[in-house]
Image 1 (cartoon, rainbow, N blue to C red):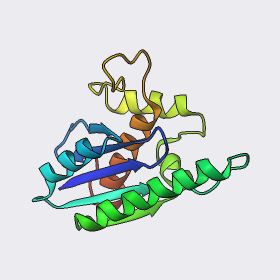
Image 2 (image 1 turned 30 degrees about the horizontal axis):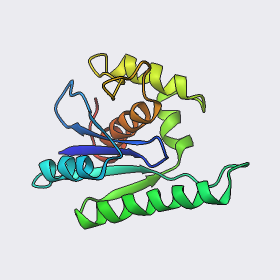
Image 3 (image 1 turned 45 degrees about the horizontal axis):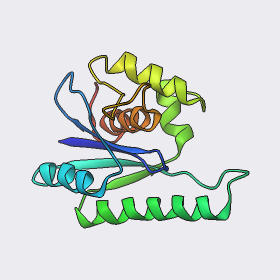
Image 4 (image 1 turned 135 degrees about the vertical axis):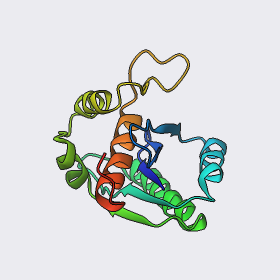
Length: 152
């Protein structure tokens, strides 16, 4: 069984976590070819996904909200096309599981503690950890714990 976490934001990511004990998530940023390759690699296995269900935030412009909605719809379509069951989970719900606040650095810190072998510097020239990757990894673990019956 595979567990998928998706942060659909502009700087979001996809994380795929196997059901094996002590597994480390595979992180993919939003590159269409990489996403398709990652999902193709697991399509013969059972999978379940946690897709972050977020709405408009105060101060966001119409263009950014349109782009966000487009990303959100893209992920729903991709998961449906690959026949991967998914649950829309509000940030407050999955973040409560890990005592994460709205501050992105808390997601990074918790992810680094839970997955010490995972590098959140996801681009070759990255100088700092990628918050979207951290949140996607935590959502994959949330899916494993709450949606798939895993205890890791």
